[in-house]
Image (cartoon, rainbow, N blue to C red):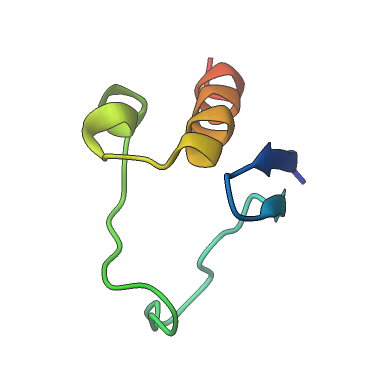
Length: 65
């Protein structure tokens, strides 16, 4: 587990559990998102992340060192 992100948006409180995952075989099937792509450490900030996501991305960046 990477960690749990707690973030207060104006209309709701977010609690998001974040995990490292690995695709063993097959392909990803997107069920609740519009798109997905693989990112490297150098491209982590190429996405327009939401405020709560920035906390997670900074943690992922630290863990990739």
